[in-house]
Length: 272
Image 1 (cartoon, one colour):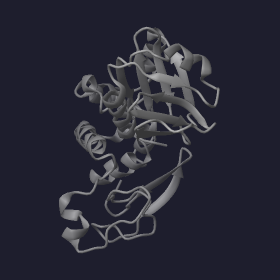
Image 2: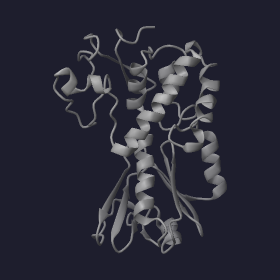
Image 3: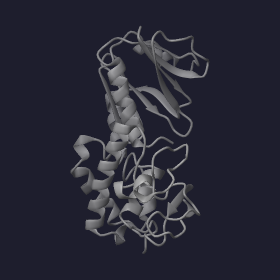
Image 4: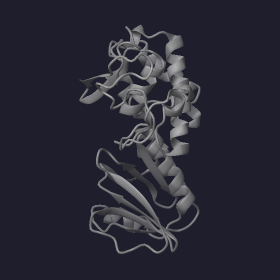
């Protein structure tokens, strides 16, 4: 599932490509035909993200709410759009560009009130400007009272929106926090450092359109090691590195299932 930085990047790309101009909208698959008909020819006024939710605003008709889920894909193209396949849930197009949405968990037209209800049920997003200071405080209020593991809490979108499996594993490693520590056992100083790091790492994710979490002194060229080769892309410390040696201590990276997702950590660097 795409993490929050990808959705924020998609929001920016939508506004850069279509913002302030009328767009043609269609649903070749047919599942969003009524909604597409309503926004067809309308001007895209806003595009924003909250966690893993994308919102495309059309003043005259409301918001297109998209959640990609596990299988959704959103791709852009330039020039005149080719004939769409019948797997395209929503196509937005102008004479010079187009975007195709396939396989989302959610694609619906919603009102301002319905959009606000989604925001209210989500936790703070490190990438939303309004949450930068207050967001960490809001999340801490829940984490500091919780008997759940910090690894589980970081993935709970009601506690913190946008953090996925990669950022969860990597930020805990970067701060030497055992993933099985309970939220209430985390210190305020540790949480403030984790929150600030998430803001930094996820902003870089938006800018580079990929996740890189390794500090400069631990990059392949600095450590004289082979670069990471993985579909995920960027350099990481523990994510999808089970049974490989830790870049820092040389111990074996471990993996276990937590809340139906694979957890990765280094027992040597992340002691309880």
